[in-house]
Image (cartoon, rainbow, N blue to C red; front, side, top):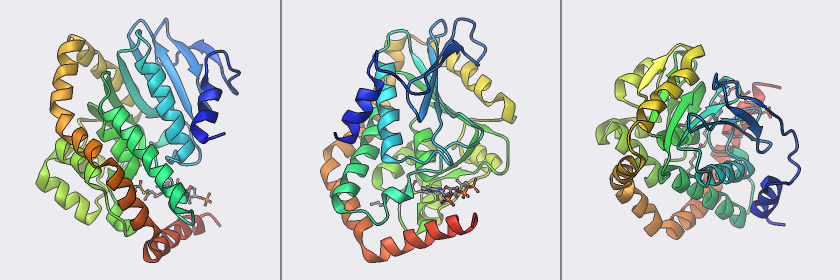
Length: 296
Ligand SMILES: CC/C=C\CCC/C=C/C(=O)SCCNC(=O)CCNC(=O)[C@H](O)C(C)(C)COP(=O)(O)OP(=O)(O)OC[C@H]1O[C@@H](n2cnc3c(N)ncnc32)[C@H](O)[C@@H]1OP(=O)(O)O
């Protein structure tokens, strides 16, 4: 069975969810129900507040593997269809690493068909998040490079924990690869052209103070207040009538979304041919080996 079909079957209502639990939400919401919808994504919904907290739990580093992308996409689709949910906060289940970005093992030593399937899943998740009608917030409780930063940039606002280890940015050039045009556009829409050009060429990972200064995040707060702040900011966004907020969001993001929709297939082909190059495979292998060596 194809991966998407397998994950869908796993998440269908009534299917037995491995590790599923039901209990009170840990976010202080009295009526909140805590539900584990899949292995890699935990959803804590608070219907009274109209908010769901979506927590990444893909150890060891919350990397965006094909399975993680698929599970996250399906969870978001379910929440989009749930009339009691008007806002979502993205965060990591365990503080320390929000997401290490795209899973490098999906981009190394595989075949072109795999690269194409993986990239399509990255595009789909971005499109789902960036076009979401819901208000989205990121409670960034850990380090947040590359694809992790992209996830947070799709949100309407970002709250970052005040910990100098928690850097954030699109650091692709430091790996010897580059951020594609829609990653770039998402950052331009947040911090402007010049700051993005500098950040992307240098592959900058910003400390919390720098990220706040450049506008990459909206607030830096003590580590234990990231989620509560994100939820309290969410209530401001949800105080605006949905239709007015949604129309405005669509208007602001349409041109960026249309660019990817128009060039979607070409973007996949471009990724596949770039990532398949021997020279690129080599730099990614070296980077991965360096990461692994630290632990062995
Ligand atoms: C046409 C356009 C072409 C291409 C576009 C591609 C766009 C790419 C976007 C991306 O997102 S690329 C990924 C970029 N990510 C990074 O650079 C982060 C790399 N990771 C780290 O810096 C660190 O791991 C950390 C996140 C800071 C966490 O450090 P920590 O010390 O806590 O963990 P450790 O480094 O020991 O890692 C544990 C374990 O996890 C593996 N790992 C880490 N990151 C990734 C990853 N992104 N993908 C896959 N695997 C990853 C690491 O190798 C270790 O494995 P081990 O247990 O086997 O040693």
